[in-house]
Length: 170
Image 1 (tube, rainbow, N blue to C red):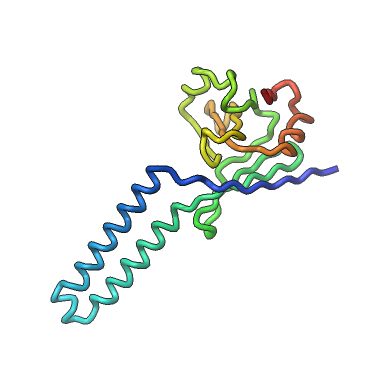
Image 2 (cartoon, one colour):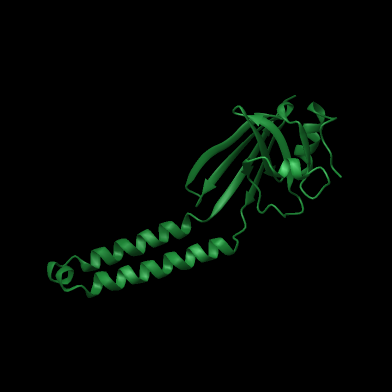
């Protein structure tokens, strides 16, 4: 019998996201002000069009900061898609759970210095300090990789069918 599980996780906005949004708003206001006040643009009658273009550009850049991750588990295969602003979808990870070397909570002792030092990292969680965040180490595209994500109980029980000795839920 085939198993199909989906989960949607919204990335929490941090301090860096708020700074970027403030910078976009500030830059947009300055560009709008300049496009409305420059006499040459006003005489040509295109100052308002430039202002409208800067408003739209600012909106699109701020909306692009809204990120969601969709986990799809099918018979031990996991696919993770990144959804930007509910418009654009991109597959960022796809592998079999059988390739996992270990699957454990981020807040466990298994998340040691050796795991943290792995440079290739895919963070598909709402935040890495989330209480439900798990990590998995594997060889992905020829490189040692750490995947951080937030599986639910159904996903963990599906993974236990395929890799019972590699899962640490403590």
